[in-house]
Image (cartoon, rainbow, N blue to C red; front, side, top):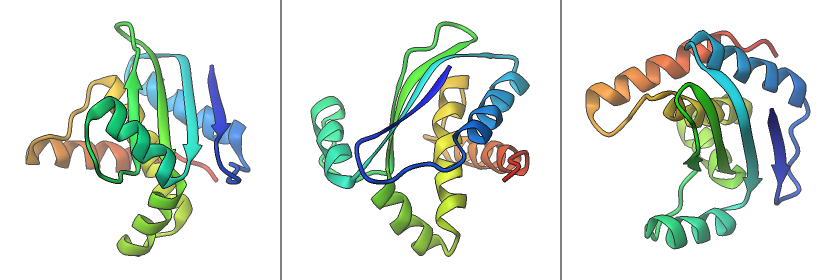
Length: 137
């Protein structure tokens, strides 16, 4: 079950379509969707989590807490909509495209994809792009 939670005025308009898309991507990687919570927040909220749990005193667009059990994908994905908006502007893409990329990025980490090295970052970007191709708006 995928839930969308809001700690800001932002709201997703097409929750069911995004839920179906996320489940499809998970299943395409031979995994099963368990309990996945998206929490949309602002920079201050996410910064506090970043300092408290990761000891990183920086802004970020996403923090994910993976509770997966084998192929059963579970976790909490916190997304700063302020950071996503700024990044969309910087990357010259729409807010929605950047939001969808960040949303699936967290899921891909749960599935097992990493992004610490350059080859891993390239593979992660490839997986993100493939997932975005499957998104029906």
